[in-house]
Length: 322
Length: 255
Image 1 (tube, one colour):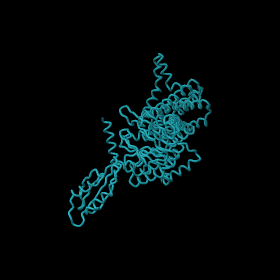
Image 2 (image 1 turned 180 degrees about the vertical axis):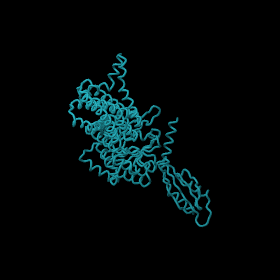
Image 3 (image 1 turned 90 degrees about the vertical axis):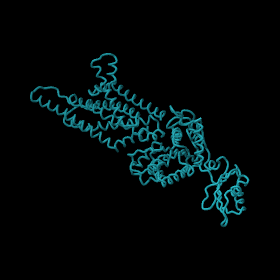
Image 4 (image 1 turned 180 degrees about the horizontal axis):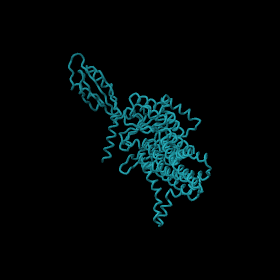
């Protein structure tokens, strides 16, 4: 649905987007993740034909953004970071204007306005002036505006910024409900957002695409190994020997490293890292129990997206420094 | 075409849903009413004096009332036109709604024509207010309507030219006040440029005088439809809109 090849945007003193290439299939929800100023908004603006790229090509639904901008614009719904609202207009009036602008015929417009108002929960304020709406409502009107012409591709720039937690939940649910019919790109600098809504994530740092994979793949990988937290307790009243347990765990085959964590309420906690591709959980459990200790907890610590994000974006910035 | 109308309609709505349209209409009605009252008062006094002294001078409503009034309107327009165009693009840039327009399936030309057209309609609405006063002239006298029609056409053409320049200036900034002030400055300069021809006869002075916007209204106010002046105003309109289109284009590259 979206094909981007070697996209670059250069300003006089800086490179905002640096040779980014990716492809997005139909119906996917993709998250652009990156710190502020990483080039997410610039990439989105190029895709929506708001600004041209300095180099490289971008195609949306088979149309080049530079060659056939009108065809691309017909197929894209765009919600910029600040929803583009006219404060002096009523909500219904505004949606009608945007719908007509996007090419909906006058026969269909009333129907479409009703439909998106229902879908985005703004039907109850359709007679209200936009400048009187709360931030959450404004954001939803912005979203309604983006989907009014039923576009193939939906581009949302930080759709949940500035909302309260309940509104964030609602907005995420709304976005998820839109997937399937629409291909969605959303940008954010919040890790949980990507984990909660997206199937695929692209991490952008300093204008470069540093990672692009499914969320589950990215969180699973972390250099291929697995980290396991093991909590051991003494049976009866014995005092447990920290070093003895450590030795025992290290002897299990497939374990590469064991780290002692702060003991809590007489329980000893260890973090075990396995060699890549080895499943050592069963062996660890057996080793502990056979030594006559109680095993109270054994769980995999999956690296969360946050760690990966920091790892990758730092690596990116070091690379640019050199 | 329909896109132009959609944008034009939205702009008109926003003129009339904010106080600006009503303020302009009221200001124009008061100022024009004052001019009308003055000129009519002078005309009436002249008429009475003639009756008393018995001298018979030609008393022509077209020549003595309508013509100076039309010239006055074109001066009032100089002050009011910047107020009409200043928000057109500056406000969209400030509020970020320009992103909506430029990512919608409409061309830049359609956007700027729609906006400029709405400004021309707004200005024409102001001129209609002056109709209230002209009605009295037709009720109590027999002026010829044709010179008046030509004069109003001239006002609309002249206004449309300044509005095109104002539209262009509005694309240059995100601050309405700057757009309005700059438009006022430019149209004032266009107005007084012909003064150089008062003492200078060199070619450059002739060119400046020709470019001056007020010279070309002369024939319209007399009721003469001169192709030369129509073409001048059409060129100003075209030039202003052309600059607007270039400016919108460069906005994309600089964005």
